[in-house]
Amino acid sequence: MAKEIILIVDDEEDIIELVRYNLEKEGYSTLSAFTGEDALQLAINLQPTLIVLDLMLPGINGLEVTKILKATGSTSHIPIVMLTAKGEESDIVTGLELGANDYMSKPFSPRELVARVKANLRRVVSSQSESGVAKEFEHGGGYTILGDMVIDHGRHIVKIANNPVDLTYSEFELLVFLSAKKGWVFTRGQIMDAIHGDNYAVTERSVDVIVAGLRKKLGEFAHSIETVRGVGYRFKDDSRN
Image (cartoon, rainbow, N blue to C red):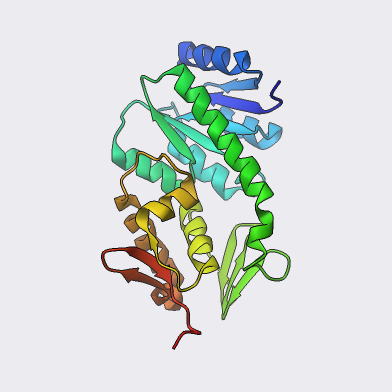
């Protein structure tokens, strides 16, 4: 039996009951919230293992909830699966840039939603088990130091010349991924798979949006992320001649 706790957030009681029934049938424990405000309170106080979050909520909407949770240290690690009735790429991309991990468009198959929940929980376990790989490029107990730029992996903080840089979840993950393999070229598909998981239905154009936002915030380090025409991106390796 699964021990994970799933927080279901939707303003429609029928949707919550449908999702709750199918998750509990698989052995998960569930919590529910009908508003963004209640979702934030439950997430911060009870620390669910994963959140199934509708974007269209009264008051604080799902995108704002995602932004707040991913910017809060105690909840930034919680995977979020978005539910959207719109199915519009702009909403999906915005959610991913804010830090959501996956999405499904309404109407959805309960069986597929359960499969997505399981897949995202597996990624959490996999990411924890692969912590040894990160030691190849982490220094000082979870830091990457690149000149005046310091990446704190544990706290998801980036500082340049000791000044904090406000990055979204996706920008941070992209920076960590590329800087770990300086000089290596990755396609947009490989980058999307690395920062959000495979089988993503979002167009690779969203990677360009994340890169553009990251470059703007990196200042003097913006040139470190190089575009390789016809292929993708790489983090500049200054040690190469």
